Length: 69
Image 1 (cartoon, rainbow, N blue to C red):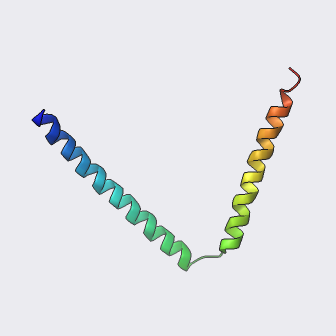
Image 2 (image 1 turned 90 degrees about the vertical axis):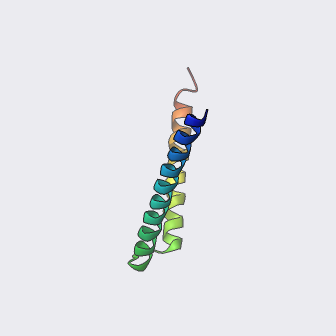
Image 3 (image 1 turned 135 degrees about the vertical axis):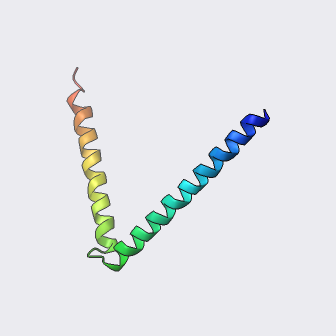
């Protein structure tokens, strides 16, 4: 049991380091994108809503396609 505790503590440490590095890299990329942005939050919101509408339309089409079988 003590061996497993040692192994899990090392795995937890590695996971924490990689998680921190990933969050740090994502934060830096977001700051760089914000500084050199050619987009606005309203434009980003509109793009996300368009993607949502396209997804819902596709789902509705595939559902209606198999309705009569």
